[in-house]
Image 1: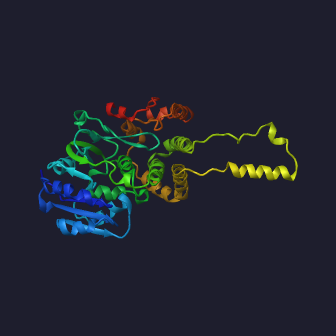
Image 2 (image 1 turned 180 degrees about the vertical axis):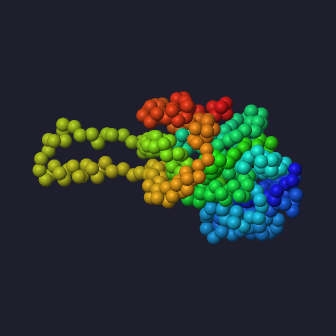
Image 3 (image 1 turned 120 degrees about the horizontal axis):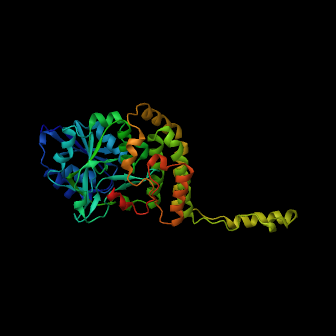
Length: 393
């Protein structure tokens, strides 16, 4: 097999404590050194990461970003400097098997796929972290096999909706043609968005379990405020479905997605209607004094907004504020569509995954199916409560 030149692009934010194991495994990779380069983009770390790299990783090219560009922006900075014909994206909280890279690029070399993704295991190798991909109809992605100790279930290669950005390879020309990771996403779901887009544009994404990496799951995210993560995780799915669905599908999906978003926000608000319904007693009072009393009561009913609920509100605000920009991106994608949604949605596996545990939420998903005839698009009416069933699809 003629091996292509490869650029491994990593993005770091205060991840110095992962570097020793990461570079130990990268230096053991079975790949010609003259066909391989490592590019580390540092997003303004303050933990001594850059100093460690300067002293201990002369085999890596370090790019010092002056601010945090997020994962999507950081990757794209690295791509600008990359020389390889194949781009490989790897999280810094990873270690890889010696044949990880050869196996990951093999389907690209043989032209079986344009983009590939590894089998990713938990750091101790005792459970799956990523064994393929799935998504529900309103854009919430899922890592198939997550936490499953039965690793052998995930040994078969298959087409998959998206490649996990933590360990993936893609032809450079394909990455550029598809428009790269969307930097407006900052972090989270940029890989789901790219995968969906690749299929729309006629490309093929393959899950390659012979390529194995190990992951410290959420090691960076757990150090960031949950409300900041929630904003991205609530906003970015709305953007990705808006950009990538065909118009007839979007007309049905988007209203349902926004209604489900509102219900999820109502849960974190613990929303109730006490004191907000007009009844007969509201007409009893008269005069100026009564009006003053009403205003006083209204002030007392004012409540603070929990940070997760404010994050949900900001997600919708971002969606509306940047709608013009997203619409331009959408038009470019749809003008180049090469594959109908009907050929893509079977890879969702769990289109009606109810992401909230409440039975009420599952019933709302069923109501959305009926109200917008979503079963006609996705070929099922099955509402999934546990996303792990995606492993059986």
